Length: 377
Image 1 (tube, rainbow, N blue to C red):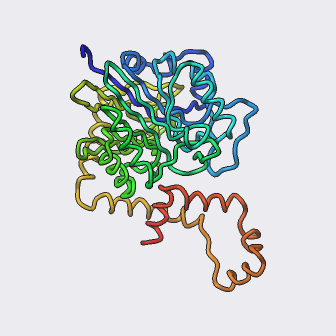
Image 2: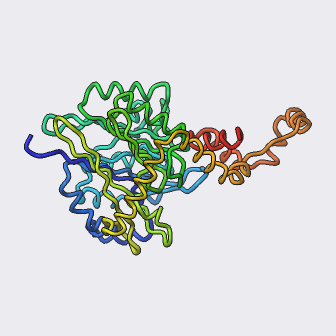
Image 3: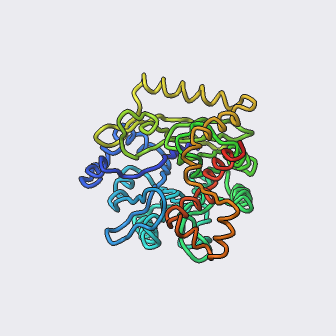
C-alpha cells in the first residue's frame, strides 16, 4: 500500500441561522474554511447529520425538546467538501416525521452518498456499513439512545442501542472487516466525563471488537480513554452547530482523524471552532494548545479509581432541581381516588406534555441514569 488511508469523523452538523446564508449562496468552502483542505485530502469523511432534510410541508412531531431540520441544499455543500458518509442514528432524525426521513434517505442516495444508523424500518436501520479501500475493509456501525427517534419492526427511525443485541452486532461486523468504528449518539449534554453506564457500554463495545468508539450528543469536548486495543472518545463536541457568544464549550469540537495502514490504526484529534458570523475553522495555535491541554488533563483523571463515579454524582446533584421538578408523586389517598376515577386525577393534574417529559426521562438511557442517581442518593 503506497499511502496511508485517512478517515475523518466529524460530529454533529446542523444548519443554524448564521450558517443558512452560506448554504444558500453555495459557499461550501466558507462553511468549513481551513478545514476544507483537511477534508479534501482525506480518503473518507464521515459526518453526523443532526436532523432530517425536511421540506416546508413536513410538520414537526409532538415531542419534548427542539425539533431540528436541515435544508436539502446542505447535501451539496457536504458533497463538494468530500464528505461521503453520513451517520443518521441520532436523537433528531425523526423530528419531522416519517416522510422527512424517507426524503433524507432518497436525497442522500440520489447524490451517491452512503449512510448508516437509520432506515425505513428496524432491519434497515440496523445495517452497518463496510467500506473497502486498497483491500482494507473498514466497518462503521451507528447507534442512538432511545428518545423520539428509534425505528421498530414496521416504522422508520434510528438504530436504537440494545444491550441484548448490539454487542453481538459489533462482533459480527468485526469478523467481516479489518477495522471497526462505532459512532454512538448518546451521553448526557454538557458533561465532560463519561457516566458510569456510558463508560461500561463503550468498554464493552471495544471488548466486542470495536477499534474506535466515538460518542456524540454532549455538545462539548470530553475525554478519551485507551482501553485494551481500542480507543474511546467520550464527547466529540459540535462540528457545525452555530456560534454561541461566550460559550466556548459549545463552539469547540474535535475531528477524529484515523490514519490507517494494513498493520495499524492511529487516532489523531483535530481541534476546530465555530466562527462568529458562520462557518467553522481550525483552531489557532495558542487556543489549540490550551484546549488540548485541558482535554489531556481531563482524560488523565478518568483513570483514577472512583473518579468517574464521584464526578457523576456531583454532576447529577447539580441537576437535581431540574429533574425532580419534572417528576411527581401522589400519596396513597390520591392513588386510591385516581384508581376509582380511572386516571382522571392524572389527566387533570398532568398535561400530555408533562407525561411526555416523564416518559423521556425514564426511556432515554442517559436521562434515566441521571434520574436513578439522584433518587438513589
